[in-house]
Amino acid sequence: GEDVEQSLFLSVREGDSSVINCTYTDSSSTYLYWYKQEPGAGLQLLTYIFSNMDMKQDQRLTVLLNKKDKHLSLRIADTQTGDSAIYFCAERWTSNTGKLIFGQGTTLQVKP
Amino acid sequence: ETGVTQTPRHLVMGMTNKKSLKCEQHLGHNAMYWYKQSAKKPLELMFVYSLEERVENNSVPSRFSPECPNSSHLFLHLHTLQPEDSALYLCASSQRFANTEAFFGQGTRLTVV
Image (cartoon, rainbow over all chains, first blue to last red; front, side):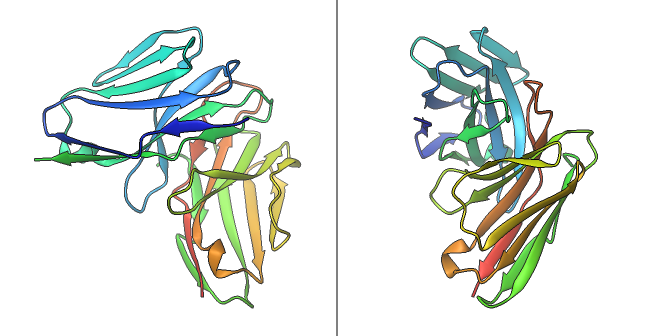
């Protein structure tokens, strides 16, 4: 079935690293995504990783993919108060319609 | 700015009203999507249009009626909605046959009273 799971809440102090975890079900997913949603806004693509990669780094963001365990994580280094938002993990379903299956989102709270 | 524009940003409607949500993209994409985001639930895919043809309908009630007149525009026509239909409705677009990301609009916050 289609299922992407995330923990619902994470609280960190400014300057610390944040790690948001996600598990997915479709082992043949080709792309996995991280989206950010700030209050009252739509979804902003942060980064994505192709399924034949283990890691992708983009400035403060590091994505780790464990395909065997179907586990994806997003690490934000030096977390800032502006990083406070909801973070969604999504997998691209193997149909050719480009359908994305989203997790429930992890609310990241960054304390000064 | 993602290149996907939704209007209106906010909408309050009564249960007997008829209204439409509009989505526009000028990214040259050939697939467009409607998602529903309710509180405490994952984003739910409602409809997928590819090359202006509906290719997926995820058991959405008929009070929601999509329309895709061309590859740049997508509408969601609403009639006789229920209070539980109150949600953020997000439009997205992508290149259907390319494994690239979907770009989302900022959404329409719908409240049914």
